[in-house]
Amino acid sequence: AHVSFTLFAEFLPAKRRGVFLVLIELWWGVGAMFEALLAYVIFPNYDNLTPWTTGWRWLLFWSSLPLLVLTFAYFVLPESPRWLLLVNRRADAADVLRRAANMNRVVLDERRLRHLCLSEQELRVRYATTTTTTTTTT
Image (tube, rainbow, N blue to C red; front, top):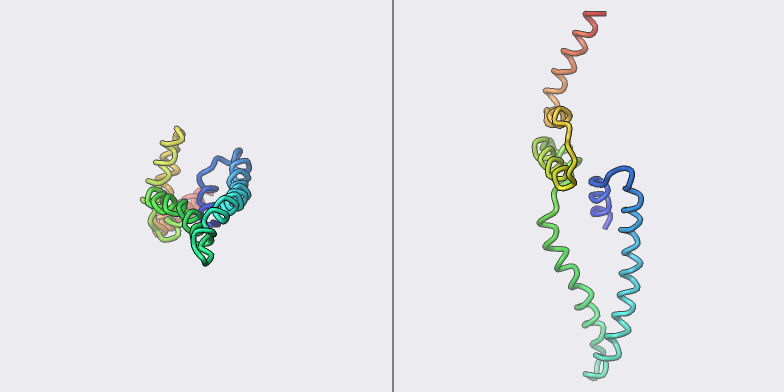
């Protein structure tokens, strides 16, 4: 749950992030209440069918169905741009950010995005030449 919370937070605009993160945490409470209601409905109906208690099995079955939906959703979710940067997949990180910006109808600064795509070695070379130029002119 913490991974999805963090991944969700990465894609939210800063000024609305707090509201959305509180709303996503609210669903834990809603889920707990739904689970209690589901148990209330299932246990009286299924415990009388057999001599042993089978209600917990049905509760487990019905409670796990949302996981099936979530399993398919993971194939649609993009990787975290921060993780992609950490494993040096800069072009993939830029693609994820472009898609997110496109879905949110936000214009990305391509210059900053190109800077993101530079490898660590290219950044060192670029900053070394910038520092040398700055030091020479002062």
